Image (tube, rainbow, N blue to C red; front, side, top):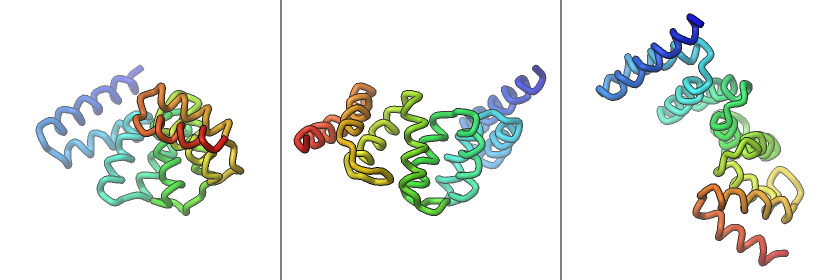
Length: 156
């Protein structure tokens, strides 16, 4: 119980410092919450590190969060493996991580997974699977999913 309270206090400190534009204290507070195991903080710290060109460290934080089931971190790891940013590029690993996030309802991962199935990246071409994931992404609000879905349906 005390650990949860400590995490909450660090997250509140982070938001207060961030709001006031105090970058270093905000980063320190976020790092403390991440080190205490807060998955949202781990993912947010990863994103912040990534925006400062620290991709390898970012992927380490995403990995900690993703291992605990955080779909946003799983999507970020998928992107890392897709792009080769912070890790060695691997379409099969990107597909695997996108699928974990997509199965939890992450629309952008559903979209990326659909494209990977359509274009045979990291897997064999599977237009049925592509259509399935693109429909979900479109329903989830990903604007470009409808266009990709139309392209897949023309191929079938």
